[in-house]
Image (tube, rainbow, N blue to C red; front, side, top):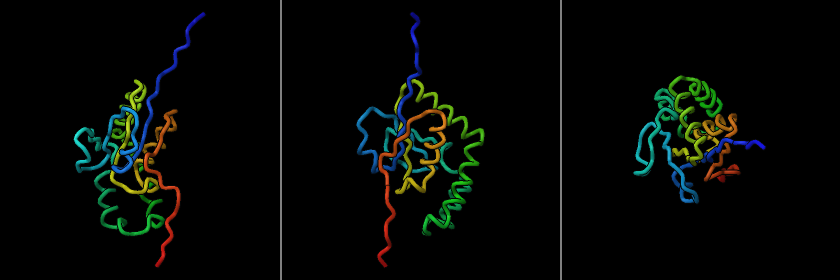
Length: 146
């Protein structure tokens, strides 16, 4: 009888800093931001962050506006960026590390994962059989009172 070998795939998490408090397994932290210090053990992976141009557009035009007004533009541009050789190389590295059984969390500073590039990176990886879990999910719309 022959043995069947299956590839061990680690788990991919996405989170903001607050969600890291709920990590229960040994997990490598990849900070996918343009800059900033999250924590000393985090590995800064700028290649999985938005381009400087997209980031600056967000800061100068969209940051203080409701995400429903700008998210579709941001999402379209970031998904196009994921096809760049720089980002594809980092996505391949991410998959390679997960294939070794390593658990990795992709962290940025966005408070709402629904309007964040970390969710888009996670969804990209789902297409390759990777299980993805957001550690600080928001599952409801806040109602403006005034």
